[in-house]
Length: 257
Image (cartoon, rainbow, N blue to C red; front, side, top):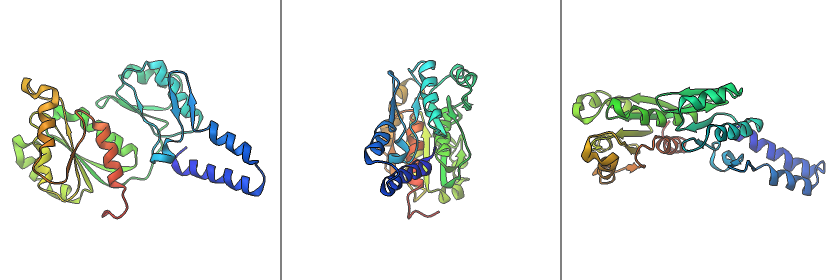
């Protein structure tokens, strides 16, 4: 059930109330009982897409495999599609698939998409990485954005240690509506990209780096103090957050297509 279908069902219910086919009190019960389901360990939000444009995303880390499966089963029964499950190992993917939930697992990003259906892709999001070691975070961002209906171009291993690699991609950067810059070490990539383009840049510091990198804090502070205007920063290793925000920016009306 995507956003359009959910809204159509609610509109149909309201029209039935208007025509007298459904009593107002019965419609109220339907609306009160359908927004979420209490599983005991989770309250599954079925109306997230009506409020926010996309279905609830399952953060898999620290949940048991059985809890993740139960949440997906509840969402599947409601007909929800393209459900993103982040931060899970391959063993969880197998359990989900063994229980007849359609599930596509992406091992580099450690995430999967349940009940996946093709959706139209719009706009242009570029995901650029400082190095190959940042690829897990990049793929989390890229797959998140693609799952929400965005065109994504990947530019991997274009860090400042070999700046010519990035400069060779200026046409792609110039045509982007939003760019996600993912880097560890000193995190300089976001500032360099921010100085080359006119679109918003979302900086993602990663925990990649040697000792004084401090698990990504060095990159985080560099990105927060970027001298390039138009650079925003998400938390360390938060590829999902960057992909989600990029999707919202990319789909804003009034931006160049």
